[in-house]
Amino acid sequence: MRAIVSVSDKSGLADFAQGLSDLGIELFSTGGTKAALVGAGVPVRSVSDLTGFPEILEGRVKTLHPGVHAGILARRDKPAHLAQLAEHHIGQIDLVVVNLYPFAQTIAKPDVTLEEAVEQIDIGGPTMVRASAKNHAHVLIVIDPADYPRVLEALRTEQITPELRRQLAAKAFAHTAAYDSAIAAYLTDETFPQQLPLAWELAQSLRYGENPHQAAAFYRAPNAAANTLAKAVQHQGKELSYNNLLDADATLQVIQNFDQPTVAIIKHTNPCGLASAEDLVAAHKAARAGDPLSAFGGIVGVNRPVDRALANVLKKYFYEVIIAPSFSPEALTILAEKPNLRLLSVDTSRSSSNDWEYRSIGGGILAQHVDRVGNDRWDAWQVVTETVPSDEQLAALQFAWKACASVKSNAIVLVQGEELVGMGAGQPSRVDSVLTAIRKAGERAKGSVLASDAFFPKADGIQAAIEAGVSAIVQPGGSQGDDEVIAAANAAGIAMIFTATRHFKH
Image (cartoon, rainbow, N blue to C red):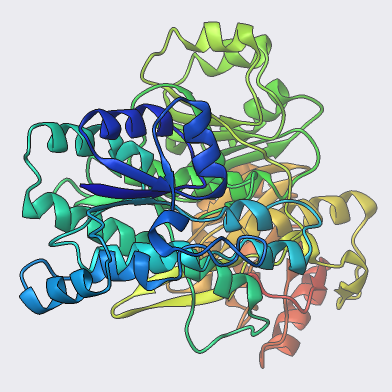
């Protein structure tokens, strides 16, 4: 047997190559891979020995030659193919071990130039991978160092099954597809290209989806940003479930909207508790007071490190997950007393990039820019009532507006200071959301401020809020019923602000 070995990722390479050599497989290689094998004492020859031609153009042309590709693509079950190989003195290639230039890692570097990126576009590598995968009935293609042990064992035991060949070929085509997708996404300057280049890598298989009868998995976007759930580190606790991941992502998005020490308690992707304070212990107390019943079994997110004091508080309650930028050693020791509690550390800073988000529907996906409430301009807000909000009310309205953007529509939140005291989410009618928020707030609705993610079509929701004691309202405006709504606020002597920006969240 003969093999070509040319890899960018050299993990486990020396041991694998030595194992191949020990089985009598003749190795051919190029450039840095050949140097690495020589340095490890593994017998290896140059690919130039196959092609009869040196590497040229600074290594851009090494393997693009019939001496390589005819040896890979020839079908062993066709005598005419084998006769042509013999006629042209070309040997068969039975094993190809190739992975590609680190394009994705290169473009992830700060300030990378177009020239640097383009130089990491592999040509010969994908060609060999695709050729080998096409002819997988006769050629083994290995692109992942994780497969080295099982391939070596299969060769040793002569158990190269059709199933193994097919699995490795499928993995190879996925590898080149993801590689090309990364290049296309980097080079395109279209907002909505004709073909959407997307590729995700399997992060973990999940026990099940939303319900036990549904299979599920978590796929990570290549080069996911540091302040996304894909980059979270789990310190302890049970494996994250499908629903845990959905709620954890919602939690992270909420706390990234706030600069002050903030605690969010999330249930079914909605914040049932949310508060900012001078420290996290005080913020947690206020957040939990927003809806202590719903907080049971929720997910807690904080935008400051968890220290000993907060850990001692958190361990008193049943939560599924705690998300924070970090945990002190003392906090980890304290929370280890609850071994099923999942602890995730992840960057909670707000992203300034114009990232995309995707949602699946039957037969396709929807794509849109991420809605970032932090991009709102407070100076664009317009007071539309005779009563002007006080400075204290204005601060509360700004907090309420950021909170409301994280609640599922129709979204209504009631806030006292920097504490969420009532929330209505996901109701088909906006007035029903108002009534739900009022019921949740109870007596704390009096003197609160209200935020609505979209306009009030009629004054009924405003009237319900006024009757509950709401003192100021912020909403996008823009309804045909604006005059009616403003008149109701003026009649009650409360302040109302139009933002001209909607934060609908389906």
